[in-house]
Image (cartoon, rainbow, N blue to C red; front, side, top):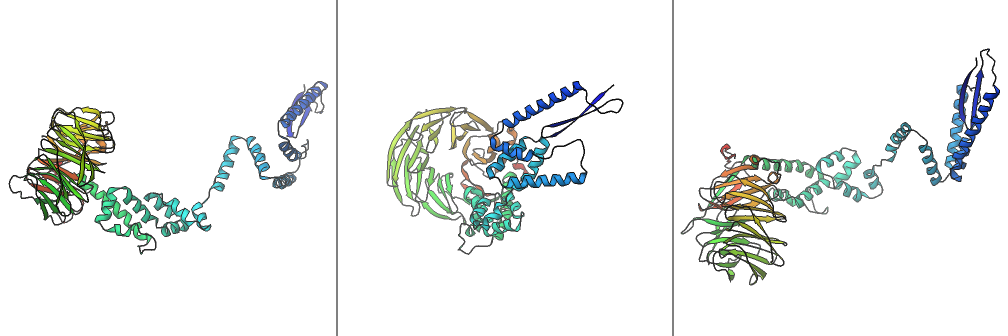
Length: 551
């Protein structure tokens, strides 16, 4: 009985077969010889077809690299095989080096296409470190330090700390490029909290100065950054816990008591009083600097800028005052009843009245103010207005909020939801926040008119409301000021019990008006006081952090 053992060695197109019978004689039977020849012919044809598929250039390449010695039945000694392998590799490399880059790439692509997945992974691991470039180190060597600095200037603080640890060259680029200074400057430009801290802590004088000016080294800004972060964390904790330093201004009204409206900046507070006067206070000393008189009724609303103070009164007039001298520059007589609220910006002013109307004015100058349009639609006193370039928003005792086009003064839509009259609102971007005598606060999407959230907690009419990117602050006739989490209020998944962060109780009468920023709330009341709630400078002051305030 004969058993056939086939051993194939693929060297070019050769196949070798060995036959052994039971007697130990090696021979090849005629039938098997025919099969072997047929197999060899088939293999030659298949290989030839594969070669024909290649481009002439690649065919030449493969032919040259495939013309190695054909394997025979006899085996070479290992040392001879290694020597031949090394010679073949040297020949291949020498031939490879003679080709153009394009031909080299084509050839390597062809080789890779013939490899298995494991080989691809090995090549990938080998190529990865070769493809990496330390461009931050390389750029200064080419005289392009400014590009390296510009790239690293986009990093946040944590990434900048990591970059300093990469190597001495990266650390040098960061130091000489004053990148910690630039990071702080970027934060001051974009974040009001950073800007406020820079002004209050006096380190703004070291910012926004070029390199020719004498400025501290980069290490100063590097050490300053974590101190700023600590200050910010302290302020946020003070807001959450209700820690503040309280200052009180006694307005000492002549006849009837009550402070109906106010506005402040870093230097002064301007207030409108029930006794028909406007009082200007020094914000540091809390002394009264000036008293403006002229209205014959309570001063119900006011707004000022760097040039003028504009006030509205229960005497139905709007007066324009010089902010420096206190001189009356203009008196507008249009409304038939008390002027309840007003806003002005960029040459446009909007006033509203107890007479149910809204007046839109063009302000060419303090002395040149003309009526553009009267908006009519509310069925009760219009208590408050706000506007931007797109919309004018008004709220009324008729329980509705109406939206009007700023450019055309045409009516757009009505927001319905409050159960009683609306006393206050603020509008910014798409968000409207309103307070009502139904004791609730509502958040609205102005574009679709949907009510996004109802905040409950006040026990009486919500008289004043303001919001920024983080918080809503409201004041009510219950004498309380509440601080709400705006972002949570906009999240429909947030439980109602988590929305009120703090309730502040210091006023002994109705809260009429308030404004706030990142560091403080300033509020006025029927109790004839103005309170300054300072969440920044609490050390050494009267710190009020009663747990009873927790809502």
